[in-house]
Length: 327
Image (cartoon, rainbow, N blue to C red; front, side, top):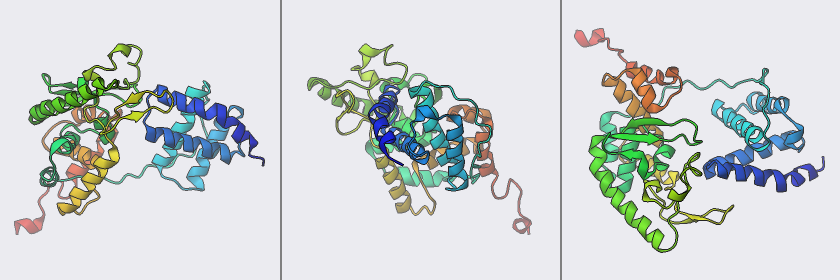
């Protein structure tokens, strides 16, 4: 079939998608992913314009991913999120339920968890801002992107709390701030403040405000309180508006550092930054915290998600001594 429908749709449709993603302050990684899923969806349906399609076509494509491509549950979920975003946020259409959707079952493997000794082995090989960042992943149970998106204003030293904003601005939560990180964080903030002052002196220093707060606190975008706790080492230009911002540090740098240090420490596990979050939850449960408290700190909507860590705690002896050990 002629490719003209897709080509004619792009000048209007895709700039609208990017504009909406930017308005809601989705990450560049999410933006790129959503664009690719939407293009694949259009191509799958012979390059018809999404306005001519709806739930049936989305369902057919997601079933294709599940039954023919045999993708993982997370991949199918990501594709679904991209397409629902397209229809709800860009095309302004509410879609009926997809009653015949074949959902890929999630892999129920137990998460990789580090021992306290292994966590210490990683942290002992770090210093400076990377040590502080990785310490927060473990000490506060943060996802790596949650940590990178933290603003100065979201750290409450007096209450030992961290406000974690949902990446899409819909649901926030409070998690704990380790008391041992208060002084290192305060010292780090002096570095952030100095960098921000340099940006202001050059005519920059404006921060992209969190979703939902851009209009409410528009005049505060140059305040130190809205700067990222872990800023990027370079300024970047918004391709849509031309505005110059200092974004947060790159997650890939953190991922590479954690993986490399785990190898150096002789840890024979598949370690990622999220492994530290899993370890946070598991060690809290091992220390006697109830599962609902851990659920709230992690931001899980359903306690069943948190319950997987109880399986990690109970793995092995399950508190029962082997008869071999009492011979």
